[in-house]
Each structure stands twice: as structure tokens, then as C-alpha cells.
Image (cartoon, rainbow, N blue to C red):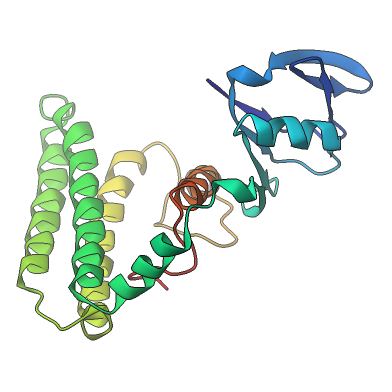
Length: 237
């Protein structure tokens, strides 16, 4: 299954038989069978698509994502028939106020911190022989991340609201360790002064923000397809 990205101004999208037809300046540049498309992402201004394309995408379970040219999601088209049941959403809301909500919040952050440590470990192992000093610095960041992650096991609270401040502190300190490690990896080749989300102009943060925008659309779609309420989070509400 392919992800189709539309990046050029003035592109038009139409339907011909069972295929998505992509035109630029009035000329066909590509035709893709709808059955081979998983996601259609439009990340440019001035793009036109027909209602036939929308209907065909919905019938094939293809989500249509709309992003700004900088990668910020602003709209999504999905079928209302793929949104699960009321029971699922009721359980989600109820879980926020019992032990499940806290357990989920802790699990989310634990997974995030594990992945951050694994990323630094992965890239660090290739520096062990080539750059021992850098390897040691990365290893120190990994050790710091693992110590901070261990604090999650000590969180005791009646619910998410009571523990939110503590979890945010853990998450924030871990982020500092992680992005310092990323800075060590890329800082010698490009200018990277740290993580910047809004208004970023450097290539690293710009690329990260664009990638996160695409990932955000995918996660949002997965949450909706699972029948969950995307606005009812367990930690970042």
C-alpha cells in the first residue's frame, strides 16, 4: 500500500475508472489504483480534488490528510462509519477517572523514554570505535534517561490529575537529556541549538516539525478508526 503525497501548487486530483489521476499544469503525471493507496496527504496550497475522488477514497478506507506547506495538519476527511461505538468512547472517558487512566499515562511516557534511550544507543554504538569521546557523552545521556524513567515506577496517586505534575517533570527532564544527545549527534554537521517547535527555521527542527505533522495525521486517524475520542487524552489534555 502506498502513501500518496501532493506537494505541488496547482495540482488537480481526479478519478478515472478505479484510479486516482494526478495532473500538473493540465498534464497527467501519474495514475494510481485506489486499491493500492493507504493514505492521501495534501501538503500544498491551490490543490483541487473532485467529490468523486473523496467518495472513492472513503469507499476504499483511504484517509485524506490536509497539511500546510510547513507540515502542520489542519484537516482530515474520513468516513463517519469508521468511528467505533458509543460504548468505546464512554469507557475511554470513564478510564480517565480510575486506575486505568493513570496506568495508561505512565505507560505512554515509559514507552516514549524507552524509545528515546534506544535511539541514542543505536546511533551511539557506531561511534564507539570512531569517536570514543562522543560515545561516552551519549552513554551518559542514556544513563540519565534510564534513571529518570525509573522514577515512573515510584509514582503513586489516586488518578492522572494528582500525578500530572510529577509525570510532566519526568517527561521534561528526559526530553532535555534526549535532545542534548541528539544535539551531540548532529551538532557537528548542522546548526542545532535544541528542540524548537513553532517558527523553527533551522533544517533539523524544520524537518522534525514536518515529519511530526505527518505522524500526527496518522496517529489521529488511528485513534478515530479505533473508535476513541481524540480530544480526550489521558495526560496532555
